[in-house]
Image (cartoon, rainbow, N blue to C red; front, side):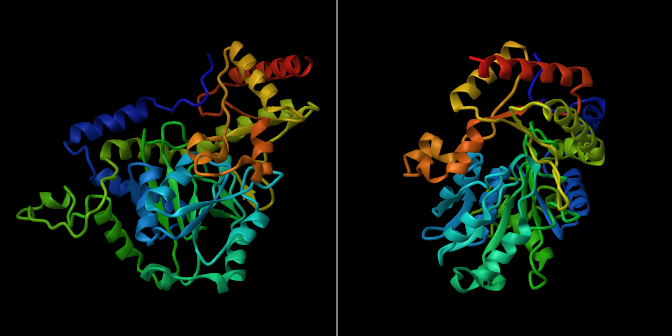
Length: 402
């Protein structure tokens, strides 16, 4: 079986993790701090906090921003459940936005119609690694400025809706020559095992708020928040006589460990070769499928954007959901693992039971119903890419011929 998206764990990673284990420091420590600095430099961000996952990072961020009952956070209907789950955890309401008809990112037109005086945050999701149209989102926020109603000191300081990007897929992507992580006000990354850059589990928050925000102070604040509100972390307490600490608030427990950061440091320092290999796999798929009348190729770059090449989201023209499912089963019979990204939120029981209806997001459903995500990862050989291509072509043509 050709797997869908295994992590790149080789001797370089093993050696760095072994060094971390032998160092005697395995929780948050020097490697985590170094990882944060290197992410900040790579993304050209103002500061970075490493966390245990995208989910915990985004929830802490929303709570710091004062999000709670009565507030609305705008997110795409076409996303993984984590994007909405964290909003519900705060007591706020996720307001779903339909997908753009020609790609997998949110529709600016639908977004415009959903902004109200309750809107405090817009959470664009860079599906598959392709950045959203951030310039249009900023322009829309300015256009709707008269509706903004601040509910916390941080919100008053910004004076407008916050853009908190869900960049779980888009580490390394470019928007108008700027790295994702330096575009939105705040960006949250995922370093889960299947992501381009992994720390097994983990994530990071990069901050790029306006100049009237003290980013050094934000960094200190979040270090407290992600460690139970404790005034010192374990590394700081190792200094002579520095055992005493205080708990400044009832915080969270979602710090990254040095074992995780050890993996991340290796991944980050060779990340360009990962992007280059993923791009090459995209090109092979495009070359093979572009001549097929049934194929709709994913957008991976244009004059303004370059994807991180996280997902190759092939769509089958004119294909029903049932046919798509049959094609996937047939591909698996060829010993090739594929996936679907994603089931829109209203299809999931938890969100359907909250009253979200799929028929209100027709573009999201249409894009989902004929989508198949193909394997893309550094260690996928050219030979196996060709096996995937043959399996997909044979499977699609067999099912569509019925």
